[in-house]
Structure formats: structure tokens, C-alpha cells
Length: 316
Ligand SMILES: NC(=O)c1ccc[n+]([C@@H]2O[C@H](COP(=O)([O-])OP(=O)(O)OC[C@H]3O[C@@H](n4cnc5c(N)ncnc54)[C@H](OP(=O)(O)O)[C@@H]3O)[C@@H](O)[C@H]2O)c1
Image (cartoon, rainbow, N blue to C red):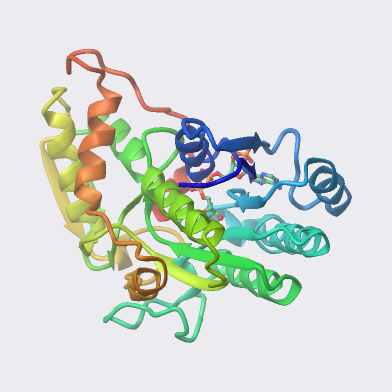
């Protein structure tokens, strides 16, 4: 564990990963958290970013802020590029000036998904749409502005709060008898709290003297499809609640509305294992745990997930 107390500033701390990170880090005595939200800290505002970092002087900045709505990014490219590219540039510049390591989260969407075997960190990026392009530009800005960075690419993030595949599909399963899910796109779901665990493990190694700056992949273990993931979600939730859904229909990705998504979002996670000793954890274990948490201790009290369904959550 860490020696002296370390201060970590977390942006986007109300998002899935930001929130999960703060929840775990709050329980660690040696960590002092500065959790900022979109309301009080805009990552695209260089003046604000610089002033806040200079006054707090954290040991690390974790950038949990992002614009993750894949379809909306096509309609609002300036917003996607502002949050996903300009934001990381501002943070990287300010972190560079103050020599603060920056942990930035990126995405499998920087790849086109045509490569079936799993993407390595140095494979050629080729984003399919605005969202992926904006994430790729964010990575490039971070690399150019600040050597002391970790870019962590993750895929298919889910958690018990906010709008994501788990909460959205549970909402739909309560309402509809039949659900449809894409069965020809492969990827690895990753629990937000698992990403938080990995970030903490990396920080701990850096505290121990590891100077392994650069880009890493991480995802939950076991390749699946949205259809298979949905089956697992329904099976887990059905232990606690009588859902309306009776039938899950597999569909090809071509039948799904919206912009083209990568056919394979599989990220090879060997570099993070070899460098930091971080092993992939099975997403099914995390799914069971999150669903159990959603339903309370005795399994009878149903805690409804957030229902503000932005149509985008499926793809991000
Ligand atoms: N979700 C996924 O499946 C996935 C997959 C791969 C990578 N990632 C990456 O992981 C990171 C975190 O994702 P997540 O799923 O935790 O995101 P999330 O739940 O959508 O949360 C993102 C947070 O960023 C905040 N934010 C947006 N614009 C901001 C700005 N200009 N300044 C400060 N904060 C701002 C949002 O606040 P408001 O809601 O108030 O705007 C929200 O709290 C992102 O970089 C994302 O691209 C996510």
C-alpha cells in the first residue's frame, strides 16, 4: 500500500468510473480525494483547470470526464471533440506544467474492430466515427503535452448507476417481453469498479517507483457479445425479481440503428499484466455482485436503477 498520504484529483467524479474510483479510494486512509464534477470543474476550461491544479497540487490527476454518447457525437461533433480531445489537452498541459502524473481513460472505439484476435496497444488506430476520432485525438494530445501519463483504454463499461448497458437493459426487461441484442460484435464487458481497482493498482506501482508511462489496455475477462451479456444480466436479475422479459432475440449489428460500431472490441491485456501485474477479472463475477447490490441484502428490496435512458447508452 502507499507510504505517505497521496492526493488524487478526480474529474467527472459523478460518472461511472469517477464514482466507482471515489467509492473505493474513499476507504483508503492514505488517499485524500479531490472529487470535482462537471458543475464545478470544466475540463475544457484551461484557465479553470490550471488554477485548480495549482491550488490543490494533487499527486495524481485521474480524468474520468468524457462525452460517451456515440450517436450523439455524430450530431454534436464539436461537443465530443471539446470534452474528449480538448479536455485531455488542457489537463495534460496543466499537469505537465506542475509535473503531476495524469491518468486518462480512453476507449476501444479508437480501433475499427476489423481485427478479430484482439487489439494490442501499438496496433494502428482507425476510428469508425466522431466519438472514436475524438477519443483518439484526446490520446494524442495527452502524449504530446505530458510524458508522465497513463492512457488506459477500456471497453464496454458497466456499473449499477447511471446510464449503461446493465441499467438500460434491466429497465427494458421490466417493460418488454422481447428484447433484441446484437450477437455478431465481440467485446469484453468491464465493471467500473474493476477499472477503479486497476487504476489504484497502477498508482500504487508508480508510488513504488515504476516509471512505466504509456498506453495500456484493460477489460474484464471473457469475450462475449451484447446478446450473451444480456442473457447473463437477465439470468442474474431473475434471481431477485420477476421480469417482464421472456424472449431475447439475437440480431446482427447491421440491424441496429445508429452509427457503425466496431465488430471486435477485444483488447489484449498482456502489457498491463507484464508491466504492473494487473490480471483481468471475470466480468461475470462483477455482474453478479452489482446485481446483488441493486437488490439489497435480503434480495427482496428492489432498488431501481436510474431510468433516465439516454438512447445512447447501448453503444458506449
Ligand atoms: N462507458 C463506456 O463503455 C466506456 C468505454 C470505454 C472508455 N470509456 C471512457 O471512460 C471515461 C469515463 O467513462 P464513464 O463511462 O465513467 O463516463 P460517464 O458515466 O458518461 O461520465 C462522464 C462524466 O464526465 C462528465 N463531464 C462531461 N463533460 C465534462 C466536462 N466538460 N468537464 C468535466 N466533466 C465533464 C459528465 O458530467 P455530466 O453528465 O454532468 O455532463 C459525467 O459525470 C471516459 O473517458 C470514457 O470515454 C467509457
